[in-house]
Length: 327
Image (cartoon, rainbow, N blue to C red; front, side, top):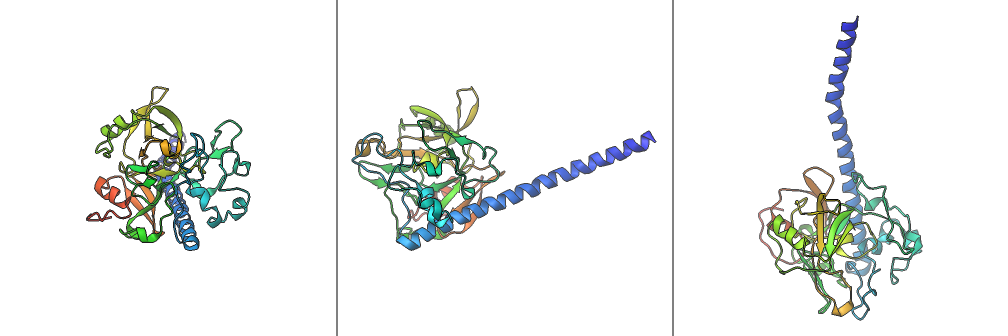
């Protein structure tokens, strides 16, 4: 009868309502596991690089005598570990001593280890223009410290695992490789400001302070973490200025409030006459409530959004000797 049919339809509706969240949770768990594996592979690649060369790769190679554009195409960590990511064929087609911008071997190339499967914009290609290689974004940034990244006038870098010209041996990680961040999740296509500010070299203590620093940038872009070969912090790095998934925002050109990052000066721009780089490049993910990270020892952990700022910053320093209750 009609009543019986309606009852059956209602029962089916209840079952779908009960099963759908479970199916979605299972899919997210699978994506999270794949993301964890990606970080594991990145960590192992860096450690294999270190085993071969007795030091970690730098975030970039910066020629301090160069002109304003001389360091624009310096390869970052992602490119320097291609040999150790089962990408040796690609590595033979590119020249790490030459700017990546116009090396067409990487154009349109998608490397699965560089993208989290939960990224909703994973299929988008970045076109930098001027005939440069087309690029897929990355969801993993390497640890470039807390706030200070690099000073070209002294060739001194920050307290993280990577900075320009760093080539750090593991002996420099006095806090221990198990306690120091190697890489963490970041969101692709994040808006950022650059080449201006900050008014203070002290890291921000609150989101409001961080947003004021973001507002001090002279240029605004909507393409953070979309150039995987590039060695600059806003494309292939992160800093621990703010905790994971912290709400640091700006108003976009469309009038919407969006997540935002900051880099006071593109590392290498203008060579030795350039300004120091301070950065708020927050680790963010598309997984609810946490980010996944790789440590320098190659292990992978999940860090909740409610981690204390002191603990998160301690994890980002290689030799800070910070005393924290738990990591």
